[in-house]
View 1 (cartoon, helix red, strand yellow):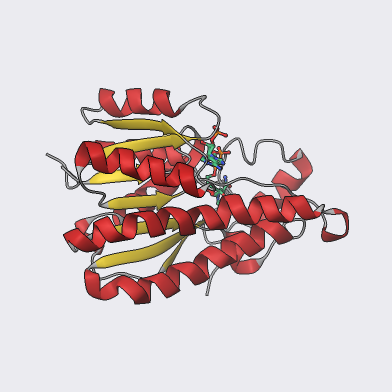
View 2: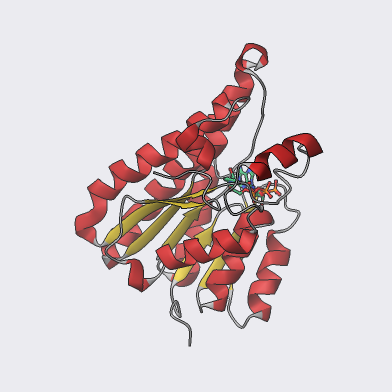
Length: 248
Ligand code: NAP
C-alpha cells in the first residue's frame, strides 16, 4: 500500500516527458492514474506502465484546451471512479519567436494550451473535489513564468498566468481542504527542449548552479510531494525545481 492508495489522479499531457514521469511516480505511490495526450500517440503506453506498477487507470486522448473535451474526460473519470482527488495540469507546448516576428495565432495557441487548459480542467474537477472536501491541484509553470525568457513572450505569459491563477484559486478553495500549488521546472531534458542548438544548451547549463539539466524524475518527485496527504498545509506555493537557477 502506497501513500496515495485509492486516490484518483488526472495527469494532463502524460504521454511523454514530465507528465509521463509524474503519472508513473503517482502510480508507484499507489494512485489510480488517468493518463492523457493530444495526438493519441502515447497515453495508452503510459497506462500500460502504470498497470505494470500494480496500479490502474484510464487513458484518454483529449485536447484539454477544449471545454467539451475536458467535460467528457472528467465525466468518464467520475463515471468509472466516482471521485477525483488529484489534478496535475501539465499539458503544454511552445511556439517560440521574438515578439516582432511572432504571429498572433502563436500567442493565442500558447495561452489556450498552456493556461486556459488548466483553468478548464480545474473548473471541471472543483465540484467533485468540494463534495469530497479533498483535493490537490498542481499546475506546471516554468522558470520562464517567473523570470521571463527572450523568445518566449507567449510561453512566459502563459506560465506567469498559471502562477497568478494558482494563488487566486488557492484562496478560493482553501476552506474546502483543496490545495492549489505550482511547480516551476528549470531546464528539463524532454522533447520540448531537445531541439535547442548546442551553443544555447551550453550557455543554459553554465547558468545553473547545480551544473546540470534537470530530469523528468526530479520534477515528478516535487509533484508527488505536493499531491500527498503530507503537503496538506501548503497552498498557493510555487516550488522551483531548477538546480538553483532562480533564487529568491
Ligand atoms: P513534452 O515532452 O512535449 O510533452 C507534452 C505533453 O503534453 C505530451 O504528452 C502532449 O501530447 C501533451 N499535450 C500538448 N498539448 C496538449 C493538449 N492541448 N491537450 C492534451 N495534451 C496535450 O513536454 P514536457 O517538456 O514534458 O513539458 C510538460 C510541461 O512542463 C509543459 O507544461 C511545459 O511547459 C512544462 N515545462 C517543461 C520544461 C522543460 O524544460 N521541458 C520546463 C519548464 C516547464 P502529444 O504527445 O500527444 O502531443
